Length: 224
Length: 220
Image (tube, rainbow over all chains, first blue to last red; front, side, top):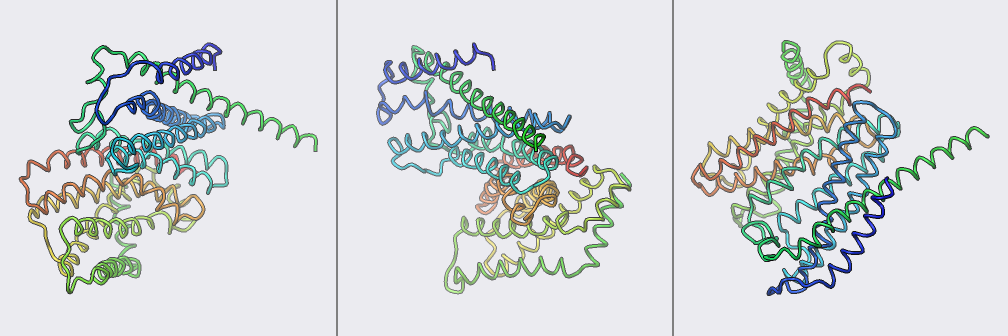
């Protein structure tokens, strides 16, 4: 990963934490200060979708040209995407506890999110139950692509068809309705980029760490 | 195309020859319905429409997963190598999807009759309801045929089959339940058209992907 991107991630997230907690936000009933969840909760979903997307991209690459590197990338992006998804659900539950009155509301968006996590948990179960490395790569890549495609309607279409109490859907205003002078955007967009870069960075570190482990393992095998 | 038809015919012949399998699934469905009947003690109680549709779709989902799972899981090792030398993988997945769709339509039809007999028939718009059954059968069989192929290559395949298929079929199930609710309430047909078109779109995506991706799992 380019050094500039790492610096950008650190600077953006510093700015998001300072700005997100201190800058002025619209005063609204019920929401009050919880509107700041926008800077921390919503970027988790953007990050998750992008990271899962990258995972699918590498899965397609693996099927076209099977090599261990694409497989590794696919797994690690899915791993970090899963982490983002879990953080997204947890931050969402905190927020819902203060605004909706209970952490789990059975809202279509919450259900869609939970199913997205189920898909990738199933993906890891599948990986764990195949021993042959090549077959594991191939089967999990196929499932990754298939399940991602099946997940799209759940996340992007069904929440828009059903009534939902989540902001930004089912007739509920999203933040752009209140944010008349675009102050929140000044923090929100950097937050989306910053969090995604952080996730990308973590995934890259894990991929490199794994490559090193592999080399050490090979070197040890040669000496014995 | 003739390859696909031949393979579908082969599936039917095999299915009719092994009567134990198909009667096993039928018995599974009967038992499920009967368990519902007993656990809700329906001799004295009546269930409302929402519960009816939830129970109906659960019964259909489980029997469909069980019956489609065997499309690859039960097959002997040597058989796939034999097919591999004879026909293209696309023909195999296409024939499995067609055959499983017909099987699923049959199962949901039987399930509906059983539910109507034991638990009651609250369906007001039969045409919409049957369309939903047919469309969801197609969707289930497209998704589950591919997943059965994946699960067959892995260890503990029966558990894996369930775990892998639930998140994939939930979209179909949600759409089907929504249309079922409209059909039970006897709403105007126009109100279900959005969901039916969505269901059709999901089916097309899943079928196309299964067709494209199957050759990769078949190769091993």
